Length: 182
Image (tube, rainbow, N blue to C red; front, side, top):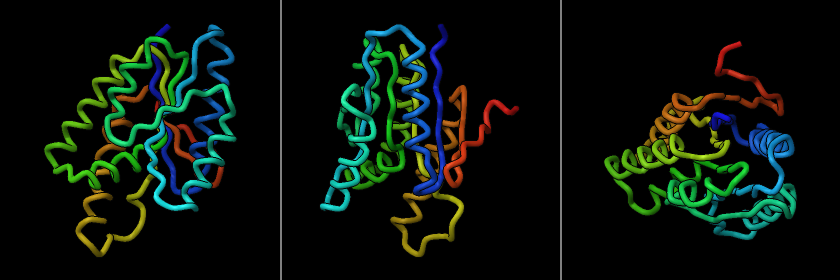
């Protein structure tokens, strides 16, 4: 069976994480049982509100998902877990970009990180779902760091959409397939 990369993109609170989780669970239910499901979490909770969000997402996933917390080197976790996984879900790439900037990655290092991610996706031995925010539909941010974030998030989204087998955009809880075109 050909591995499949599904890229799920949408605005904040658009339903993208719920959609990806539902599809990953559905896919896994139809595949060989006994393979593990891995959730690669890029979030680094920094306050109690974010901790509550993380707890809510963990409850939504249920106990049959193995959560791997990795804010920066997600390609290594994909390489490590894909041979024994039935499915992997990475949530989310925009937080990953934020983490790279927080760790003072420059443009060259971010491009290298994206390249490492692309390579790990091409070598991934199981279906994988990637979740990301669409951040380019708003106004131009007023400060340099926010503009860098928006630009790098847009770059990551373009590169993931290019290599993905399927791209789905969620809007107001409704999924719209944009690749392959119907």
